[in-house]
Image 1 (tube, rainbow, N blue to C red):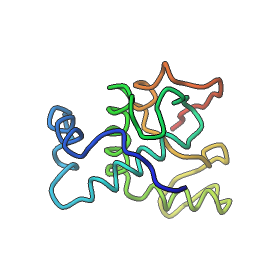
Image 2: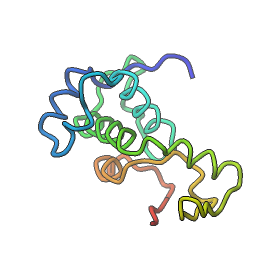
Image 3: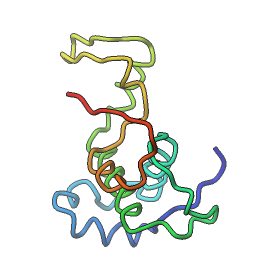
Length: 134
């Protein structure tokens, strides 16, 4: 994918996380904050659900909501450390995992985005639709 220009610094993310209820237990010293923020931003940029044409190649002009969305996706990744394993099962065609008592549908074979991110980026949504099911 090449290099990605971050939409916010770890210091800015630290400030957001300090005021976000429940974030302090996950956003702690010792985690790879920059890497998680870049992964979260990449998820948001490449999921195909949002339009970011206003953001320049050098990463300038993301809105506050877009920066907050990156923080929320980072928290979502930290809250769900086994998400990649689940997505790998789905990609392999597994529809039911009885060991963990979960069922999957092929429709979920996509980048998983935190529900709070979708709310924050509602005005940036593209014409495509998706649903979150439980």
